[in-house]
View 1 (tube, rainbow, N blue to C red):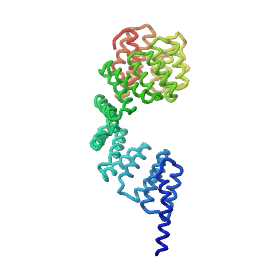
View 2: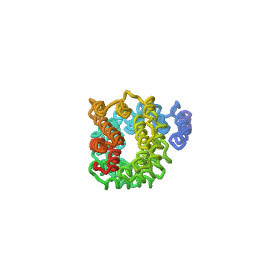
View 3: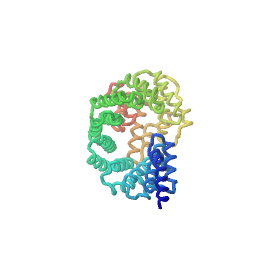
View 4: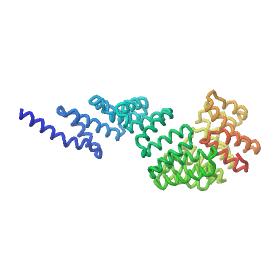
Length: 412
């Protein structure tokens, strides 16, 4: 009996260094090896195996190996089916795989086991929002805020849900509270800035544009290497009609963030075009065309820049790589002289109301550009006004229509 007890004590002492290493996530390879030894041991206690499984799973999550993490959480739940925390952490692993249904099921179980587990409400709310169920997401974020009123992330996430519902005032209120609670929350500043810019298109006016610029400037102050913030601030300067500052920001975005180079070159091309720097605009659109030779919209903008530069059209050559069976192929055919404006507008019809709205918007704008090329200023003005009134405010064609009207000297 004494010998058996001594052997057990020795085994426990042998395991304790492994447990310390296993639970130290700073050295992931060593952590996994130590967790493996505990999990594979014949003498490990149920509690130590459970701990090793959850820590190995967390390490796998950190490495992006979500399938292995889920397998470990499965085994940990088998050992302790009452662990709300493990259900919640497995829910986040499923969330990372964008398997929102399984994630929500796990968060449901976590909340059933522990109704005060705030992280489960956060995860479930975010999953609902990404499934398009913003109201349920907001309900979960409300509960998260009730449990933890100083949780800045909860306000930011609820702001995102309100933004998706187009409740822009509520979204701005939530982002503002998130910033009050955490003045270094770059994402909250960026989200509020985007919301201000969009609200400016819906009656917010110039003051919202300036607020958006301020918020993007705060993001840049907090992270001077965040290229997307320069891109977004450039877009906001563009919306204000300050093309020089927009171009400066697009320059910085291109320097800092090659991932957004295509968008930055394209937007800088628009700014150069409307500021009268045709050679630079043409260079930008040529650059975007090289990056995306199959993009029909890029081909259209390059054609517009070529026309204004008195250069021959290359649109017919571009059609060799563009899918001419899909929208906006009818617009390209209009530019090639193969369709009339009326035929393009008819082609923009679609049984889906949103799709029809978007396509009619584009038909009006690009037909307006063609009318302008042919010297039909009044018809171009009419079409640009239609585009400015009807295009979604996030569309390039909306901002371009406003810019064209500004250049013509007409009001939207």
